Length: 377
Image 1: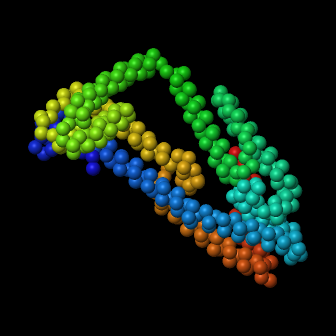
Image 2 (image 1 turned 60 degrees about the horizontal axis):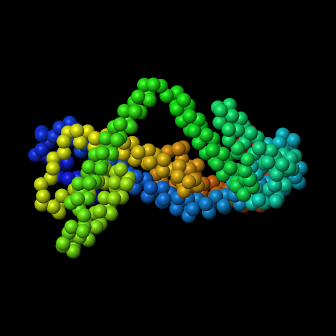
C-alpha cells in the first residue's frame, strides 16, 4: 500500500499543528488512493463482464437467432398454405413473421443471413433485401453527414460495411457522430474564448510552470540521495537502482503522487532529517493532486468506452454499473430462448394453426414492430 512521508501525514499528535494546505493535501492523497482502487475494481469488473459476454451471452444469442429463424420459417409456411385465416388475421400474422425476420437480419451480418430468411423478407416486403439494406444504410449515412454539415463539420462516412451486422454498423456510425459533435463543441469553445478566458489560461500555464519547477526540485533532491553509484552496500545499491527507475518513470509522467511515495520509501529506510515542506510547496502539491484527481476520475468514466469493451456497450446506457445489469439481461435472454423453443416445438404439431391464432389475438392488444431496423435514424 502506498503511503506518504511522515511529515506529510495527518496524525492525532500533529492534527492541531497542520495548516489548511497540509490538511487539504492529506485529504487529496486519500482520495487519489481511493480512485486508484476504484479504477482497478472497475477495470476488473469490465474484464469479467466481457468474459461473461463471450462465454454466456454470445452462445445464447446464437441460439436465439436460430430459434427465431426457425419460428419465422414454420409460421411462414403456415401463412402460405393454411386456409384457416381471414385477411385480417393474415395481415397480423405477416407482421408477427416480419418481427422475427427483422430481428434475425439485424443480429446477423448480411452475408450470414439464411437464404430462406432473406426470401421470406423479400416476399413479405415485396422488395429485394440487398437493395433495401444498401438503400437504408446509404440513407442513414446521408442523414448523419447532413446533420454534421449543418454544424459545419465535414465527414465522409462512406465505407464497406458488408461484413458487419446492422447493430455493429449503427454503433460505429453513432460513435463517429458522437466524436464529430465533441470535435465541433471543442471548436466552438475555442472560437468563443474571451480575453478573460485567455488570461485565465495564461495564469494556468504560469502555475503549471511553477508546478513543474517544484517537481524538478523534488526529483533532483531524490536523485542526489538515491544515486546508486554513491552506494557501497550491495543490497542498498540494488534497492536504490529500483527506486531510481521508479523515480525516472514518475518524473517523466509529472506524477507528484508517485514522487512523494518514493520519497516516503526513502524516508522509511533513512536516518537523515526530513526537510519540512513549506506552505507554498503544499499549495503547489495540492494543485497538482487536484488535476490528477480530475484526470483519474475522467479515466474511470471513460473505461466503458474503450474499444475493447465495444461488445458490451449496448447493455449499458453510457454508464457501467457492474455485472448485475449484464447478468439480468442474460437471464431475460435465456428465458426468451426457452419460451421460443417451446413455441417452435408446438408449431411443429398439428395445433400450429390454433397456436398462431392465439398469437394473432394477443398481437391485437399491442402495436406492430415491423419497421426496418434503420427506421427513425
